[in-house]
Length: 162
Image (tube, rainbow, N blue to C red; front, side):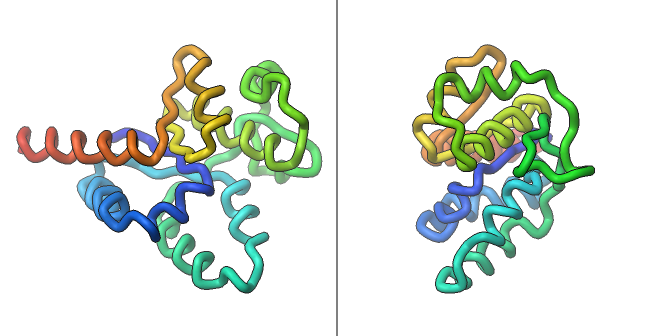
């Protein structure tokens, strides 16, 4: 079973790409993947305006069976007590690089560092973050299109071996 960490920006993709959502649900039902999230995902979802309540409800239906893990690293003002694990400062600095330290960039760094620490695939549609993660060694980040191919191949391989 492969751990899959979904960046919050992927959830909108499930609405616009029903084929990806079907593959994701199928792989999850076959126990080929284990989706994980952190409090950062939940915080981002809770900050969605009421005008996007339909999107929020759709996202919550997707993440319901996910495992919630502690973030790998702690950032004051973002991390929650008991929901973050200590990490070397280098872990976040490596992902942040020379970026401006905005809340969004810091949240992205926490999510990416957590995915790396959990030995999971990090799925994001954020090109800058995807590019930065793939520059680091021993790191696997995918965009929507790559993830769709990965899921299709994973399910096909499972079907052939069953």
